Structures are given as C-alpha cells and as structure tokens.
Length: 435
Image 1 (cartoon, rainbow, N blue to C red):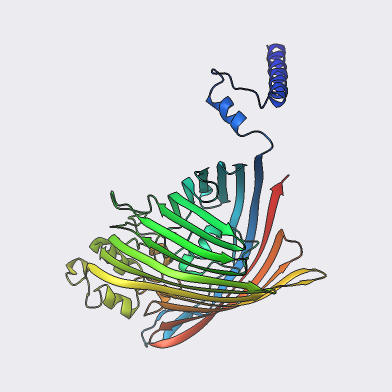
Image 2: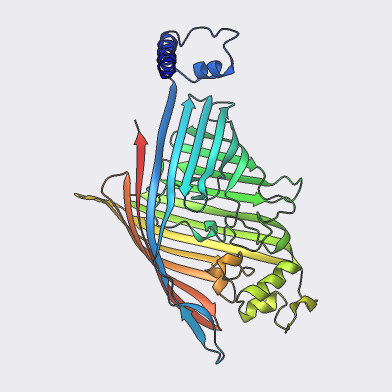
C-alpha cells in the first residue's frame, strides 16, 4: 500500500512538472474553451508585464507612562499612577502584491498578533478603467485620509514612532478601512493631482451610504497639499454594543447611534533633508446615548466630576436605575491638529533623523478607561483635551531597518489643574522581501 502511494505521488509530481514546462513554453498561446477559469486567470497573470512581490514588516516596541493622574482622594487631592513596561509587537505583516500592467493590481496584508491571531488588514484589487487616471478598487483597504492613514503600516519609512492622535486606536476620528473606491491621478511636468472617492460598510446602522473623499496636489515630491472629508451620511453604530475596549471606531460604544462628519486639510513640505507636516481635523457628532450603557459605566469605572456631570450622573446616589436625569441626546465636536518637523542626514553609519512633534486632540465625550470603551489620553482630562510634545530620534543603518526612540511630555487638565506626565516608546522595525 505504501509503495502504491509513493508511485502515485511520484507520477503526480512528474505530471505537474511536465504541465508547468508545457505552460511556460506556450504561455502566450490561445486558451482552449474548456481550460477552466483558474487556468484562464493563470494565463492572464503570467508574462513579462506581470510583477508579483512577497514582503512584510516586523516591529517590536517597549513603552511606558509615568505619574499620570488616576483619581481624586477623599481630601480632594489628585492621585497618580504609573504603568509597568509594556513589550508589544504591533506590526508583524505578511504582504503580497501582484500587478498586471495598468490593468489589474491585487494586494493582501495580513497582521499576526497575540490578541487576534491572524488579522486581515487589507485584501483588495484595483481594476484600471482608464490607465492611471481612473481605477476602481474593491475589497478591504485603508481609506485615503490625510498624510498617514493610507500608509499606517509603513513603520520603517514613517518619521515618527507613533501614528498621529486622530488615528489613535482608541480614539480614531474615522473608520480606517472601507470597501469601494474610485480613484486616479493625473500627472505632468512634475505636477500630480490625485483624487479618491470611497464608500463601504463603515459602521453604518442600516442602509446608509457613507461617503469619503480625499484630494491632493503634489509638486515634485517637494510640496503636497490636500483635503479630506468623510460623512457617515446617516446613523452609524459602534462595532460592539458591549462595554469593552473599543478599537478603530469614531463612535463610542455607549452610543445607540451617531451621525457625524469629518473634514480637514494637510500639507507636507520636504526639501534638503527637512520634512514639515501640518494637519488639522474637525468632526461634528449628533448622537444618542444608550441609557443602560451609561448606567453600566457609572457603576463599573471611575468618572471624573466633569464626566459625571456630562452624563447626568453627578446627582445620583445609591440606585442609578432611577436616573431620569441622564441626557440621551448629545452634540459635540472632536478636533485635532498636528505639527511635525524632522531633519535627515546621512552619516558613515547610516541615516539619522531627529524630529519634534506637537499633537493636539480633544474629545469631550470620552472617558479614561480603555477597558470600557474610553481613551486613556483625552479621557483623563476633565475637558477632553490632550496635548503631546514629542522629541524623537530615528536611526536607519540600512533603509530596511529603523530604530526609533521617542520621549513624550503629555498635558491634561485634571482636578482643575494642568497636569504634565511623561511617556516614552522605543521600537525596532525591519522591512523584508522575497526576491
């Protein structure tokens, strides 16, 4: 029996080798009508104009926050706490891309982590409708928005250790991914105009059609100026209705529904080793809270006096079920802006890039506890405002390796005082590819 299996396996391998050799010699031949769809696709995606790549990136980091405000004791004084050192692997990507001239472009991006196992970050295909001027993208992909969302996984080339606050995992202003996009670029004499129009599932509550657009002008990779807009175009909902850590959602998970619009502009200036980034974003929300979720928050986690008042919980004692004072309708604005300056020079050991960064983010609706859907940064502040002053250094011994160190001085308003606390992050990233 084992000999029979061995003979069968050997014959199968020989047939496959013979089939591949015959296919290589006749790849430009006419496909028979009964060849089947898979053979047809193989023929379409073979030839000298087809380019396929397998590559990825791995990043590991160490971070810590110290002496941040935690609560208010019975004497009315602020209490402080510090985190233990946290070792993480935020990026461990396997990426595959295949291009068939200007006609087709396919991309797959998998991220492997301890929490989700293998997560599908992106899986899309581009269909060329009119060369570079007009393409249709279908699948799951990062929406074009600002300078960083579309390239959020490019950790070896990003001139910072962290994403901007408006794209933060626990307080993002947009849904990072979407499903359908018409886009293209028009170029000539150093000038490029790129545009994109998107829609998708995007946390919609029912049959709404969310809409996003991003348009920018680029001159010789020297100057880039653009604007982005996004509308939920009706009610949106959080990805989970259960109290728990909320990731990559602009809708708080204690909201029954939320209608919002995000808009802003950005600029990048790069010259003689200098890189200046500027971004401004604003998001207006018209939302309705879920009364049971608010009651659960009041019982389960710390809320500062301003948050208790905002949720109508400040006058409640004992049984919170009698909380008729909880306001369900709420209108609020989330805003953010970023200023980043970096300079890169080449040494005998590699490229060195020091940078400074100012990041501002304000969300009056959030709370501090991540495990209940909040944000540990703006959520600590009684007015929802968070400021971060960063000083960092990037060392690249070769282009495929980036070693980063960043120190942050963070400021929030807590217990009617302006409080500064520090944090730092160190990371090492490696970009790899198969030839």
